[in-house]
Length: 144
Image (spheres, helix red, strand yellow):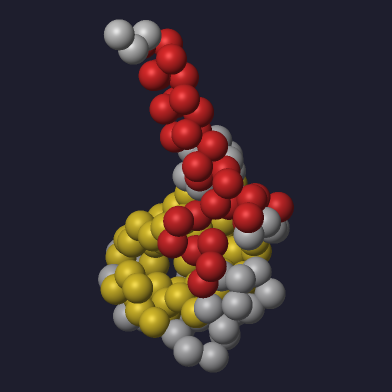
C-alpha cells in the first residue's frame, strides 16, 4: 500500500515548484516593474490646490495617501513574488467620486507591463481610470 508520505511530498513539491519554474523560466521574479499613476483630471481649482486624492498599498506595504496636483505623476516599483500573487491596489477620490483599482496584479500585468520599459501606466481622467501598456493607446478599465 502507498505510504501517505511517499505520495504527499512529491505532490506538495510539484505544486510549490511549478509556479516558480514558470516564473524563473522568463526571469519574471527579477524584473522591477514601474507603476505610474498620473492625474489627468480637469481642474477648475486655483493653481496649487490638489484635485486628486490617491491611496495605494499592497498586503505588506502601505504607500500612504497622496494628494496630487493636475498632471502630477505618482510612481513606485514592484517585483513579482515567488507565487505570483503580488498585488498593489489603490483608491482614488475626486469631486465626490471614488474608485478602487488594481494598479499592479502579477498574473495580469507580468507580460502586458513589460512592453513599455516594464511600466504599468495609469491615467486618472474625468470619466474613469485608464490603462496603457505603451503610452499610445489607453483603455478605460475602471469607469467612475
